[in-house]
Length: 176
Image 1 (tube, rainbow, N blue to C red):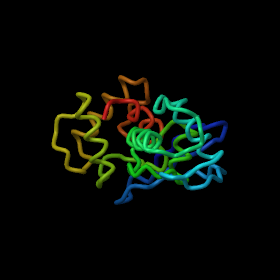
Image 2: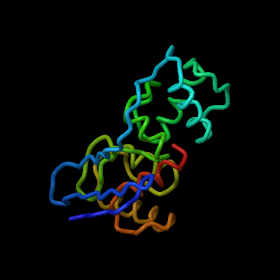
Image 3: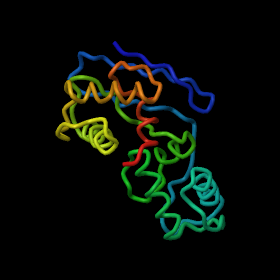
Image 4: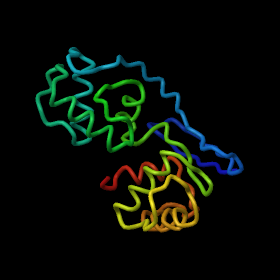
């Protein structure tokens, strides 16, 4: 059993994974955020709030005018890329959570034996940054575990070979 304690905007979270499970677990956080879905053409105060958050994270430098135009959409897509979300330019509940936390949300806990698209994302980011030298095959095996431990050591994280919230957060800061 793997457990990780973390705090996000003064809200405690406990992440739990069972290493004997065949699939990865997706961690959800009930954030209490109730925000409208925004997209190209949206206007109003919520768009101003979005523009301010994107500015805060360094993705938007236009006018804070409450108009969701092409420049805002591009900034949203760039931010979604950084936090490993679908880059659709639509700001739904998960994108809002990521904007408020400054970190990826709803990412699975990955460990030896995990498989799937999230492992491919992990392997790709580690490979692009010189930690992983194997095939990007979506299987979390020995080579991936060694790369994760090296990454964790270099970033001052607990070198346990398991990627949880803190690991995804650190990975989101790397070029990818």
